Structure formats: C-alpha cells, structure tokens
Image 1 (cartoon, rainbow, N blue to C red):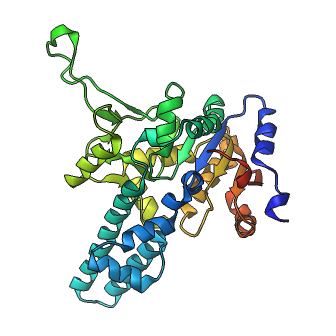
Image 2 (image 1 turned 45 degrees about the horizontal axis):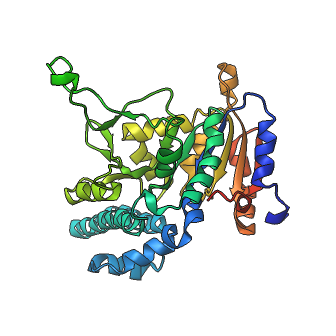
Image 3 (image 1 turned 45 degrees about the vertical axis):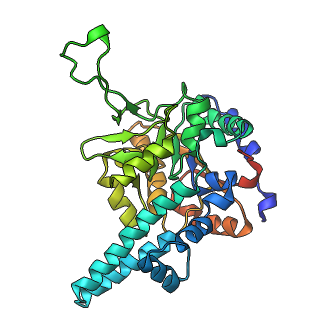
Length: 350
C-alpha cells in the first residue's frame, strides 16, 4: 500500500461525524507549523540559522555531529556525559559538554523566535480562517488540542478566531483582594496557569509564550502597544527563558515534563483522553516513545474496568511512503482498539 491509497483526512472526519457524542482530540507535531511555512519551521531552517552563530563552541558541535537534528545532537551530548562519568573523565570536560548543551538549547529558542513571523498580522487572514475551521471541529466535539510545538502559530489562530471556544488554563488573579481599591478597580496579576477541568488546549513540550517563574507558570500575551515577540525577548534578555522541552531522548523529555506542574498536567491529559485521537504532523520517531506511552495509557483496557471511557480509536497522518512504513511497523505499540493511517497531505489546514 502507498500513501495515495490511504483514506483522506476528510474521509476520517466524515466517519467520526457519524459517531454520536464522540469526543475527538487532536495531537499536533512540527508538521503543523511546517505546513504553514517549511522554510521557517523545519529542522534544516533552524539548524542553518544556528550555524551562522558566532559562538565557537556551537560551531564545533555542528561541525562534529554533521546533523541538524537537535534531538540527535542533545542525545549525543548526553551520552558523552554518561560515558565520561563512567570512565572518570576530567570534570572540566563534562562541564564543557553540559555548557554546550545549555547553549544549544538557548540558541534553539532564539532561532525559533528570530525566524518566527513578526506578529499575528503577518499571517494572512485567509490562512487564519482556514486553520481555525480545521481546529474548530475538535473544540466543538468537546475534545482536546495537544501540541508539541514551540512556536506561536496555534496560539495566534486560537486568539484571533476561537477565543470563546478554547481554555488554556491561564487567567488573572485579583492582587490583595482585601485591600481598598479606588473606583472598584483592583490590581490583577499577570496571566497565571491553574489546573482546570475545562482546559482543552495543552502545550505538552512548552511554548515561546509560557514561562516558569518558580512558583507560578505565566503566559505572555499580545498587547496593542507591544507585540508578543518583543515581550518574550525582554524576558529572555533578563535571563528568563520560555518553557521548552528540548531533551534528546524520551526519558529526558519525561524528566523535564514531570518536574514542571504545567507540563505534567498536559501529559496527564494526554494519558486520559477518551473517544478518538487524530494526529497531524507527528511522526512518532525515536525520541517520541513518551508520547506513545501516553496514548497507550489512554487506551488501556483497565480503564473499562474502572468505568472510565478509554481512547477507542487513533488516526495517524503520514506525509510519505517511508512515514507509512514506519507507522505500520509500530502500530502495535499504541494498544488502541483501532489504529488507522491517513494521508496527511489531504488535510490542507492552512
């Protein structure tokens, strides 16, 4: 079977619309952003940007690894540290490798920010409208949208067209509620995250506009006098970096996730979704086994026994024949009653 023989995205949606009261969830990977502009959001574009850095250490790392796959580079650096400790290597060598890993992560954040469209109005209205139609179906079905992307594209579409339908868990608290406030206008906090049952938007690996301030997880938002990326840059200049899960392997990614209350809540939601899940732009590669584990947990037979509704069906979008063969080889890992593959090129979401 070739990719052109697969069901289309429209076939899948039409089928699910026939399932009464079925929740339909969406998992977005980097393909969502690449579908908007591959020249900006591909690993090759990010790698090419970082290769122009004047940081000699990063130049040496890219030259030695001969790859633009950040996850692979991170994994190689982590592996080096493990073996270096086993063989009692000089501590300064290990510290240098850790420093290289830290600089690479910062450079990745900077690259995403620098290559990113300047502000929401740089995205043509027709693209916003088309994407919002794509996303609306999931929110209307009482489903969740779970993204592993760092950029602002999803946030911008939701803010501009679907604000009343989505809930990302962020809101403002009244500061000093017991104090007197002239004109009944109390001071309010910046946007803070609080666990909410009705939350339906989840950034599983973090995003440019989300920051961990130790006690609170906060969100930057667009203001008319200062665009969102400018506000993010000001935070970064103060050494406050966005929440980004950039670890090499799935184990390290999970380590980062479980040690952040916002990210761990996102993963909990992935692991407990019910109904159906459609994936778009996510290839379930070597560094994504934690995502597969989350889907496997959502599909678990034990949830039937606990009178919980499990994940019943999974629909995975692929872009090429090689992607198709890969997904076919790992279908059994999801433990879902129904796993079907569709042609992601047919979705035309932008």
